Length: 301
Image (cartoon, rainbow, N blue to C red; front, side, top):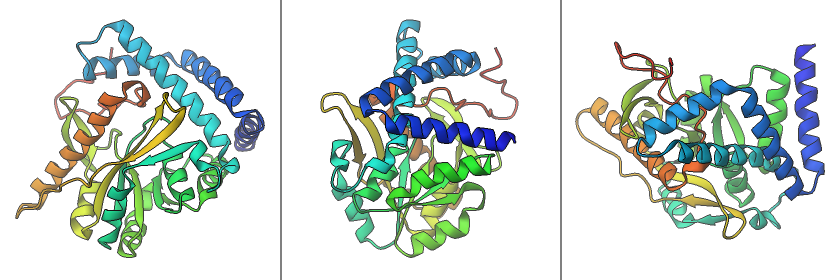
C-alpha cells in the first residue's frame, strides 16, 4: 500500500506540473522545494557545512543566498522533468543550447567510447535528455529508487528521448559493452562514496572520498572522458549544456597512481564548474561524509 501511495503521489505531481504553463510550473515547483527544505533542517545544515568548507572566506549571508539559489534550481528541475514529454528535436532549442559540441564529436570519432563526466549541477536531469533529443543518446548510471514503481515512472520519463539506464550496483558489464560499441556513458561523479569503492583526493582543498570507477574504466578501455555540465543562463533564459575538451589522463607504469591522479583531475574539473556557478550545485549532499581513518566527522555538530 505504501508503494502504491508513493507512486500515486509522484505520478500526480508530474502530471500536475506538466499540465501547468511552464513558467507557472517552475514557480510552483520552486516554492514547493523551499517548503520541503524548511521541513528538512538537517539538509540545510549540511549545505551550510559544505559551503563553509568550500568557501571559508564567504559570509553567512553569501552562503544563505547560495542555498536559496540552489533550492530554486531544484524546484525548476522538477518542473522541467515533468515537461519532458513536451520536448522534441523541433523545439528543444527553446529549452537547451549546446556549446562545445565539437569537443564531444572529436572524442566520439576516436571510436573508443565516451565517458560523459558530469555532476549534480542545475537541472542535471535535462543534460542527458537534451543530448539524446539532439540526436546523441547515451546510457546513464543511476541508483535504483527503493520504490520499484516510482523508479519505473522516473526512468520512463528519463528514457523518452532514447536514453538507457544502467543500474549503478550492477554496471560493469553494461558499461564495458556500451564503450566497446563506441557508445556514451553518463556518470555523475560528484558524490561521497564508500571507502572500498574510492580514494581520498582533494575537493575544494579538503580530502573527499571519491569513486575511482570512472578512472579505472577509462584506463582499461581507452574511452575518452569529456566533461559536460548544464547550467541556467539568465541572459538567454535557457539552459546551456557545455562540453569541455577531453580530460588529459595520466599514463605511467604505476596504474594505481594513475587512477588516483585521474580521479583528482576529475574532481578539479567539477570543482571549477561549481566555482563558476556556486548557486547551481547540490550543496545538501554530504560530500565529505566519509573521512580518512582517525578523522572525526565534519557534520557531527
